[in-house]
Length: 471
Image (tube, rainbow, N blue to C red; front, side, top):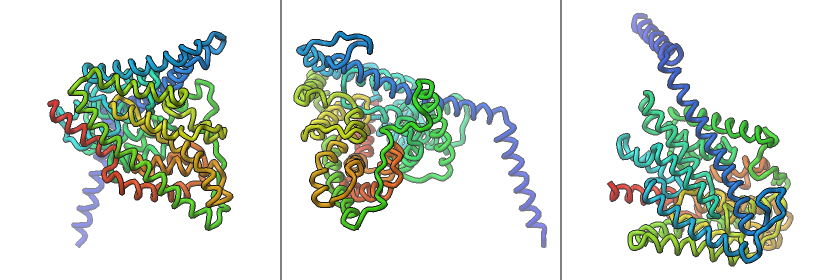
């Protein structure tokens, strides 16, 4: 009677012993763990470098505009005429150089990088994946994003961080053997999530983004790998920032925001619906324009690969001249100034910044949309403050700005959980979690009325179509 039970117990003990032997006391297992850790560390280092490059590029462009000296000690500034002309020339020619290098030397590096990670997951293991995830593409992404940051493009750094992280984690499968489920999806998801997490010091949001947007499903057997990669990459960034003298571990991407929804009344809570609808519709419209515009630029590049970049770069230069330079760069300094310092920007700032982000994205140069979208959302929030004060009086202005940032951002990327959580992690405003999640959900539903396919998913499909014609 007890023989089957004893046999089952024996099999379980044998399996346990095998797992201990192969997972803990095996030299191959330890080699695999070491290579995995090194790839996660490399992802963190690249995310830190992108952050540093953004700061260096911002200072360089401010120097060109005549706002600062070459160094902090230098008193010499660019003359007024050069401060207007030089940035316009640099951003126009910079667009031409980056797009030519991308197409001639680094095909496969186009776009933010997140669509490429999604496209890689849609492609079975084989040679075609190497056209999306390789050392050449990782190096090209780093080089071209650096050029873009120093040229004043309206791009963020999170997309390339995702792409490079996915490259690193996938390439280690060529060095040693990993379980099939990790080769197929787990390592790519882990590298992508780590790229987001390390870029914004937002480990929870990075983990959620890997499931919600890149993988588009929760995969329990890959969860541990994703979390480990995210944690290691974030620790690396924190250590490197600490070596630079930044106060840690209290680093927040924007800074501490003390907004609190705990004392809101029913009328104030209803502001969530208004902000979610406005942000979602505007974000969805922007996303749809980017998808359509990207396809159009692809056609134009086939017609003339020299004039098209010059037109796009010239458009960015014109926006920079009209806005007095506010359209240049990622938008992080402006978003931080609006949210933390209450700096007042002109009514057209969010429109100008959205247009600059649009031209930068449709060009297909390496660069993300997180920072520009959050900056547009901050500008929208600031402009809607009088309206919100009239309709829903008593809400903290920083809370209004945060909700608009999440609403517009969610409308663009259609990843509501990531957008709400990342804002909490970037500001430390945990008492705003519920209203931010409410805004994100409403914005997501409204965005889908305009843009039925999420922007990253649509761009991934465009990339796969282009790849098929290339091969």
